[in-house]
Length: 280
Ligand SMILES: [Mg+2]
Image (tube, rainbow, N blue to C red):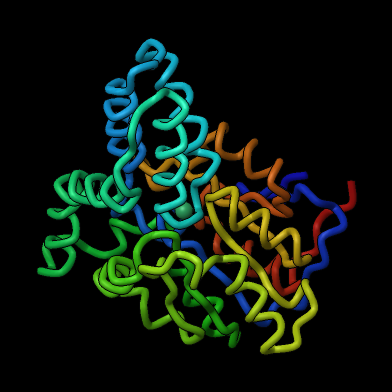
């Protein structure tokens, strides 16, 4: 069901709206497009590694294997994709290095691609809003004005998320805190953070929303009864829907789908119960 004059879809007609007090945002692909294009760095790197194993398939077959697990694990800490790579190396008779070695190789390659974006933001050469999903700041301003306590949760390394959220000038919105992946990867997960927010604040599910473009955060939000907002944005354009992402996020348990935040006011109206979904 589509909300009139907007790009917002209601997937779950029984979603309970109008009780929001807390919110959890994913970072990359949900607010920030600084790391746009990261799969084009990670996937070929992993394919090259697997092509060096004794019992590898064709490059095309390897590519399909890698693409599947990289996408499935998107939203979790990066190390989980590397742990899966290690398993795939073993399956093909190879001797893997430590997963942290592969993670560092990937981060070094990605940094070559994104460092200019970060420096340009930090030095004022780029307007931060030009590296945000369209309408994101309006949505964040609206939530803040309504007193919603916001948390930022990312599978990217903590130091990078802190730096990039500052560069985008969105750090100030997250009074609940900014959380990224820690060196000991069992210390943090989106699941743990969501559980902690709920127990610390004695929340019922519909008092919390989770917004993201990754399977993991939508699934975890759905599992605790939070209002889940999927954001399947075309990251190159910073707006508009990526249909493949959308269908995946619907399967993960999205209550609402907004391709971007260009209808921020309507989305706020829905979340706070000012706009009632049309009866279908
Ligand atoms: Mg993301």
